[in-house]
Amino acid sequence: MIFAHNDYRIFLRAVFSERVQRNPAYSLRAFAKQISISPSQLSEVLSNRNQLSSQSALKVGQRLGLASDEVEYFGLLVQKATAKDPGVREATIERMSLINQNRPTQDLSLDAFRMIADWYHIPILEMSELPRLQFTPKRIAKRLGITAIEAETAIERLLRLELLEKQTDGSYKKTYMSGVFRSEHANLGLRHFHKKMLEKATDAIETQSNQEKMIGSETFLFDKAALEKFKQITEEYFTRVVNLSKANRKKPEVYHLGIQMFKVTSEDQK
Image (tube, rainbow, N blue to C red; front, side):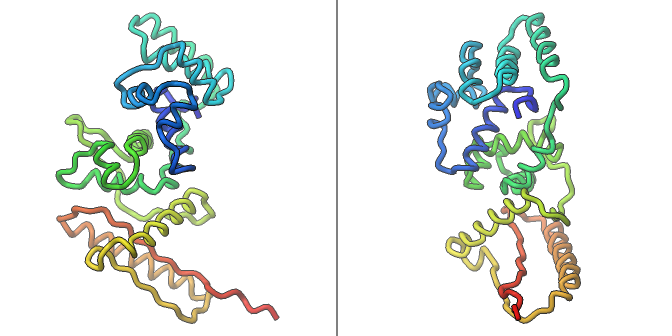
């Protein structure tokens, strides 16, 4: 994972974000303790207000459980970020290239997986078009109920995937056309995404008013041979809803639409 990065702070934010995903109770303080630096120093490093020292880099790399060549690469990333002498910086980059020569400079397949698996990436893309929104990690995190580091890591990932673009005035713009993400094959990322969205739909039943949501269901007999026809009807429905969204100029919130249809009975075993 480290070899996919050219900035050690982005790498640290990605590691922290991944651990939060695995354990929502995992804190910045716990992360700081594990890598043997103070929480305040770690906070300043992750927010680009401070730098690690070369001595700290070795310790942090080892505490993260990196292999020896990964520890060296992490140290070089720190050295590159702190080097003031152009010659030192050039030599550092050359050494990084030698270590990383047989590896991809960016693991976009991993980025693509995380973009799908971590539910908030797509809402963040949509939020880039919200009028009058201050598009910062702190504001995004507050609107979505995630951490600022998760928001910042997501923005960086969307930029690498070229789904989001930073404009010359500092604003952000999504670069993909609105649509529906689908997969014809089993996909772990999509399973993570749909599971999380089902959890959020459950929360909405308790926390959102009828004026804010529309949740309904039907239970009926159905022949699975007609499932393809159902999928076609659903495709048309999604298209109509997306077109309705495009036709409405006032869009102050991001919504998620999900449809679930599945068997609740097992086949009769004779």
